[in-house]
Structure formats: structure tokens, C-alpha cells
Length: 134
Image (cartoon, rainbow, N blue to C red; front, side, top):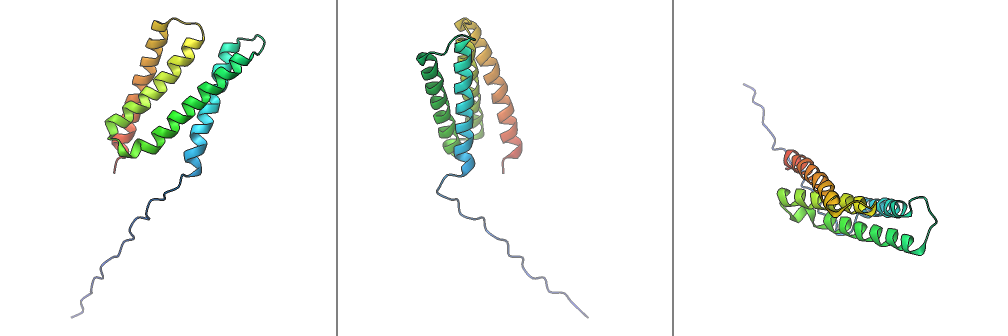
């Protein structure tokens, strides 16, 4: 009578988390900040001549948005999925509402557009986090 011995399978443990920041952790917020900064600059410019105030508006807008994206990327693992989705929705809705307000729209219209985009981002992010959570 031959029996087969089953050897226990040894699985690798996950590699410890690195303490440094990955290249994507820096590149993505920087890219999004540059895009938003240029977008704000070109909306405010409106085909006219470039002024120093428009340049500073684009730089400050881009740096602020990049910093918020970077901070959200660093703290997102500590947040529950509902709060993480709400943070992404608030960031996206705030950015779009701000850019819409630069075009000369009313505060109410900019708020409605920002809330709509934020709600869409909240739902999309929640779905993504809910279906991919381990």
C-alpha cells in the first residue's frame, strides 16, 4: 500500500512596506498639479496678454492641488473606504468647481458643477475601493 505524504506548502510572507516614497507617489501629484496650474492660467488668460498675476495664480493653484493630492496619497491607507472615497470626491469636486469659477461663472453654478463632479467621483471611488478591498 502506497501512501503519499503531503508536504505543507510554505507561502512567502509579504515584503515589508518601504519607508520611502515611490516614483509614482511623487510623479502623479506633480503631474496633476502642473495640469491644474496650466489650466487655471489659461482659463484666466482668456486669449489676452500674459500678466504676472495670471502666472502666480497658476503656480499657486498647481502647488496647492499637488500638495493636497500628495497628502491624500500618503494618508489614504489609514482611512476607511467610505472616508477615502469622500476625500477623493471632495478633492475632485473642489478642483473642478474652482476651475469653473475662474471662467467667470456664478458661485452657485460653480458649486453645483463641483458637487456633481464630487458626487460622481465619490461613487466611482467607493465602488472601486469596495470591489478591490482585500
